[in-house]
Structure formats: C-alpha cells, structure tokens
Length: 344
Image 1: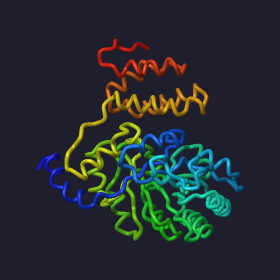
Image 2 (image 1 turned 90 degrees about the vertical axis):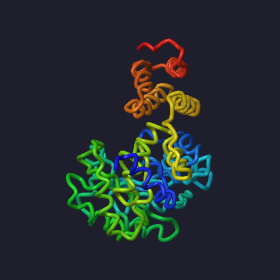
Image 3 (image 1 turned 180 degrees about the vertical axis):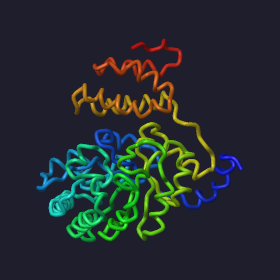
Image 4 (image 1 turned 135 degrees about the horizontal axis):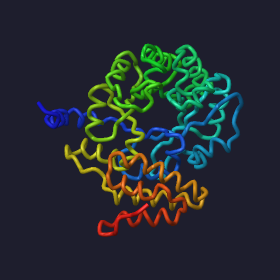
C-alpha cells in the first residue's frame, strides 16, 4: 500500500474525529495582526499570544496589553471570534502566580505556560525549555498558577520532549498534569534538537497514553500529509500549527476542507500569500516603524520560501530592500505572472 492509498483509508477516521487546530505562539512573529489574518478563514480553533516574560515582579497592565491587545475588548478574541489565550514564561512560582492574578483581572480567559522555548537567551535566564531539566520545578510552577486562579480560568502548558534528551519527557508531562494543567501541547523535539527534522510524533503518542488531559501534537506540520502523519503517529485528535501556518496561511482551512469533504485542495498560491503580506503591512504601517514592518515581512517570507519557489525568488529579490514602499512595490510586482522578473 503506497502513501496515497493510506491517506484514502484514514479519511473516514479523520472525518469522524475532526479534532481542533491551534495557532502556536511564535515570539516576534505571530502578533495580534498575524492572529487576525490567520483566523479570517475557517480552520483555527484557538490562538496563543507571544509569551509575557515573568521574572520576579507583577507586571503592569500595559505589558499584557502590548502582547495581547485583544484583552482591551473584555473578551480576548480575534476579530473573527477565535479565542486568544495569554501565555506566560517564567520559573519563579510566586511571580508567576502574581502575574496570573493580574492577567485574570485584565480579562484573560485562559493562561498558557511556556516550557518549550528553545532560545538560548531565555534558557540562560531559567525560562522556557530550561524547566524541562527538573520536572518538580515544572510542577511547582504550574501548581502556583493554577492555585492563583483556581477554576476561574483554565491553565494549559506547552513543553518539548526534553532539554538535552528525552529521558524526562513523560515525567515533565505528568508534572504539568499533576500541577493542574488542563491541556498539554507537546512539540515533538527536545530543546537541543531545536527545529531540525525529523519531528518525533510517535513520542507524543507515548506521552498521550499516560495522561488523562488532552494532548496536542505540535511540530513540522507543513502540509496535509504532515497533518495526517502527526495525528496517526501521536494518536492526538488535536494539533497546533506554527511555522506551517506562516508558510501557508491557507493550511488550516485546507485541512478543514479535507475533513469535511475528503477532497484535497491545492496549496495556497504565491499571489494569495503575497496579498496576506500586503494586508499585514497595511495593518501595521501606522503602528510600527516602517523598518520594523519590513523586517517582520521578511521574517514571514523566510518561512514561506522553503516550500514555495515563487516566494523564494521574491525573497531573494527583496532581501536587501529596507524602505517599506519599495518592498511593497516589489511584492505587488511579484503577484503578476507576466511582470518582468524582480532583481535584487
């Protein structure tokens, strides 16, 4: 049986168990504008903010509102109505508890705890994936936040398969559950593996078998086929998209279409992706400095270019452009097939 035959055979399973799709938090990439754009089409069920870094004090409201401007509405959702969960990153239980109470007072409806960030700077300061070296500390941190908010709002967590290796993967997952997490997202790599393929979705399955809370599979879901493999190997009905949703803004919608009809729609074309980038620029140009907008657009295009030759050509042509108007003109030109080739 070849791979396409396998895809056909599992259609019924996926149609009956459609599962949820979350939008992952990505520091410096997925902000409120990106959340808005990526949830305009059906597909994403919930989103998570970039992390609010907690050190040793209770942060002022403006910090939370900067990371999650959706809080200002009193019901943190994207304009399309998709829930926005606030993420905290830290290791000090008392500080995490104080900031959890602050988030609650500001209208947060769910708190997510980041134990998966692999960034060296974050890990050197005892945050993110560094907590995976000590399941007891991880449990204490989750329990402190859960104790601070009680049953008023759910506490969830995101981990990796470990720090240097996978020996403590199950212990960390159990620690999160024992601390009071109601859901656990697992990125299918260790911290030291970073984002290097492959993703070990089968290890998420081992964790899922030992937990009673929902487990969400995350990591390297770029295509419909990846989605099917991640679900099959992990056994998780729910997944979280990060880089894959940036590379193809239509991925979640395409997954939903397949679940509903069994039909496989083609990947999102470059003109549609470029239009998404133009929309992002229009939303941000009066909020952020223009050079920052250009940098964000390049960052987004960098995720697109690995699997889209047209995106790669456009990125190569525009990678040294620093003025926003010039960059947008290049993007518009790239959307017209008969236009002359862009030059750097």
